[in-house]
Image (cartoon, rainbow, N blue to C red; front, side, top):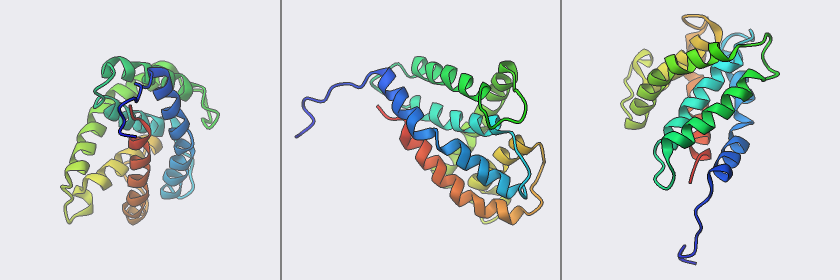
Length: 172
C-alpha cells in the first residue's frame, strides 16, 4: 500500500524489462530516419548506438544498483544484438560498432543534457533536439545534411517521443 514491502528488482529483471521496451523502438526509429533520408536505406546499428547512449545515461542515474556495472552489462548484450541485427544489409563487425559507440556517446550525452535543460534556440540548427536528430541522421546515413532539412526539424518531435520511451524503459 505504501511501498513498505517493495523488493529491489534484480539486474536481470531490469535488463529484461528494458530490452522488452526498447526492442520495438529500433525498427521504428530506423523507419523515421529513412523517411528523412527520402526512403534510402540507413545503418540501423548507428541508430542502435543512439538508443544505447540514452539507456546508458538513464542507467547511470540509478541509485539501488551499481550503475557502471549494469550499464556495461546492458551495452554488452545490446552490442551482440546490434551485431546480429537482421535489418543490416551487410554484416557489421563488433569493433566497428564499439568504436562508433565510444565516439558518439559523449556527443549524445552532451546534446541530451542540453535538451533536458530546455535550451532550445530559435534557430533550428542550434536547437539541441534538432542537433541530436541531425547527428543520428548523419551517423546512420553518412550524409552531412538531409536533402530536406525541414523534414528533419519536424522528425525531431517524433525522435523526442522515442527518447522519452527509451529513457523511461530503463528503471529500477
